[in-house]
Length: 335
Image (cartoon, rainbow, N blue to C red; front, side, top):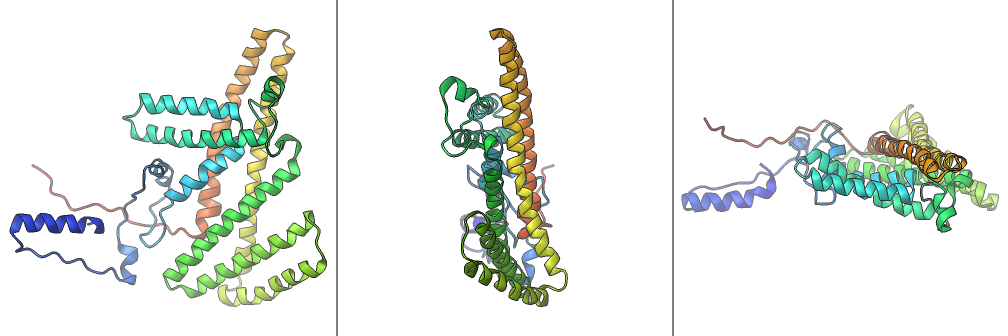
């Protein structure tokens, strides 16, 4: 049974048998951890994100529940990609209607709650990018970006996406190091620690490409990386450098945040221009509305798929160990 239910069971047994029955909670030994069944229990905010966590096999008991990480990072990545105030408002209204009319359908309601949180982040980044149905907010309401106009800043957006990817991957490696230490797999912990340090040092070196600094600063970083490589090979074998390159490839995958978001804003701008070229208010509204509708459908599907992929492939692979067994409590079937 679940450990938090032991105290309640003891009280019920004492009440039923007058103290004649004793309960004893056994300690779980390290070698038994992988055989302990798994229950996913998350607080109110994270509970809906179990919908995405259930797409994966259950994690082992000794590993992590992926749900909280999905709850924190998925809507953040979704908002970075879509990033439009108008689209966020539409998705927010749709999510509220779905929750109201389909409250008894658990999976659909959970999906609507995820959509509502993602819509909030979409509006947040929409203000940062200065987008409301593309450039419509700029023309009608003089909406200006609080941070950057991403359609005109491709290179800065690439750097931003790579920075997000680096932080996400390094955080995953940090969780992986903690997991290996907890399981007393010290060799694997050393490999992941060196990988984390190398990625961090290479990232600092690349910053010099955009923020020039003396070679005297860059050279020690690169020398440290070269000195760590033999230790990495000794600890992880000849395949360890390939695994390190794989981590760099994972970081580069986050460029999709920039690419998909750029496609979305350009399609929104095209919709506005085609609507304006009709020369008629009603016809222009219909043309722009239809194109915005299809762009919004793509804007829901693409960020969802790619944000999940960045979690399942690039992030979870650093620390999550799957293969757990679902907890099925003992029960007596009524005749």
